[in-house]
Image (tube, rainbow, N blue to C red):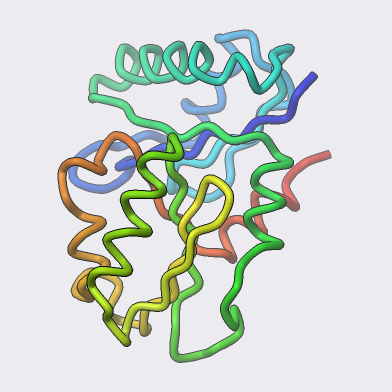
Length: 180
């Protein structure tokens, strides 16, 4: 069994409401075990008898089921628990800096991660602390500026809508702690 984390993008914002109990029920209906939802921002930790090589098939199955059940165009980034733990451990900035937000941008594939890292380099924005990691881009913008820095505006481009999702490091720690 592999422990997975589905990071849903765009739920409980913009008119797409997905309640945690209904979300957990959907994952159980799909045959997954040890299903746990964390916070109301679309985080589901579950176990499946599928290796990391089955990621694309799992992603497609989950997105289709979400779309059918909740009537929206669903996008997720699916990571193993090991990958999530590595993303937490690899955060390169001061996560306790009270003036900044510790974010991790999860990317569905390396090309997206590379494109975001390249964009960050081109922006040369001193407000945006950005560094690529394995499958992620670490980002630490000033508090209150997570929608208006140059990198935030680049990240908001429609080309990244279905391929990225961002989580606060504290949310990731809660997901990691939610398991058995």
